[in-house]
Length: 336
Image (cartoon, rainbow, N blue to C red; front, side, top):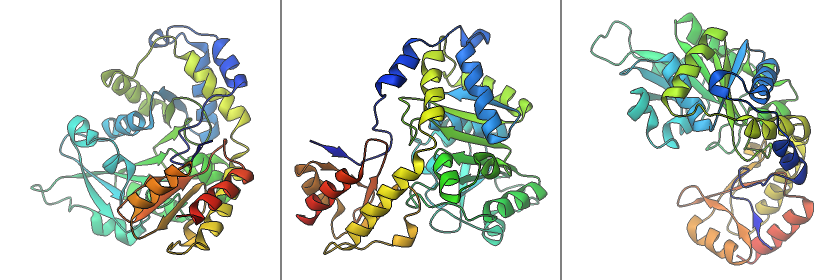
């Protein structure tokens, strides 16, 4: 039996979710007539404390729609180190929105002073114009770390004071909220736009959403159409997301607990280095001499992991992983 820890996107819909999809009430969403899509968008907007929301097929599209809403070609976007919208979206920001990135801080997080150091001078017409500040919470490449309470708000407030837009890539915002023990709306509050994902952690097969003011979402709807993300009877997919929010959101602390159990077991292995303080949600990253070799040997024992760098291995817990699975994983890794 394979234990797949490559990502929390590898989950499959259970029977109840499939029934919800099969019985979904649908209509033509481009005409605004899909009732399941409307229900999902209204629920997401309410959960995030925003005026409106829009379903999109993927987190990448959600982020790219946000860039199109906030920016013009030639603009500069300040992000944390190794931000998803810069590193993992196939260069879409440059190819589609026509923006470039400046990096603030290290490890994915930054504070006001680091934001200000990354800004382009407004008086320098020969430089790209800083237009947007985009944060990622939890931060994927940072190992699922959560922005500390207050720090994200300080950064967003300073950005707004400087006349800049703010966007939160909240693909795993649900995990951040669970880790901090707060409502998702509290994390989303400082930002003009927020993207969230239903297929990371929540177990839906596909889908994300972007939320913000009604004016921002009106622009987002146009951008989604431009990118090919407007679909017809999309309620079949939205029903899965609605089911995930109702049934899988509250259980996210279980994934955090299994990740902690995995991290503590990995810390005891020879030849492995791990920063336990950085394991805050459902992502576990650790250092080995040769990540690709480590991953291949683990795979031969039935454990699937990701080599993020030549020396960094990533494991992600999810709703298909229980305590017994972690015991099997640690037994297999001990043989590496």
